[in-house]
Amino acid sequence: MTNSSNIKELSPEQSEGLLRTLKARFEKNRNRHQGLEWADVQAKLEAHTEKLWSLHEMEGTGGEPDVVGHDTETGEYIFYDCSAESPKGRRSVCYDREALDSRKEHKPQNDAIEMAAAMGIELLTEVQYRELQKLGNFDAKTSSWVITPASIRKLGGAIFCDRRYDSIFVYHNGAESYYAARGFRGSLRV
Image (cartoon, rainbow, N blue to C red):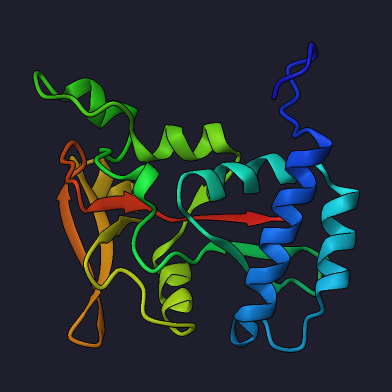
């Protein structure tokens, strides 16, 4: 829901429902955030309610966001999309607006970079993607765009990752490509 000042916020009912979902996922997957307590995470979320909207967007597109870390320097909790496969509501997208605009026909409806920005999240980097894979087996059947180095993007390419044969692979493709099994995973700091 958007109010008159263009700030994206959830209704009290939506916020309560999302917090219940996040708490249940947090409790079920303790291996992702050992040493952290839900009460601390919830207090941070309640102090930064604007972040709930982004988490709601992550949840609504199939990302299943969960806490994967705590930055002790900034005090922020780090959420990643932890769905087993690349989020369903974020697949069939090319890498960025430049790639989308370059397609002459059969354009996808969106691109990963702009979609993430509209949600208030960031694509995972390759390093973050590898960190996520230490917490479970993700993208065994799908793949996810990750932040592409400028030197590769300048040449028209983009990179994506997946997990096959119990290994993490980083691949390249033209940034304008899109596939039903490729989406993107995001991160959010609260």
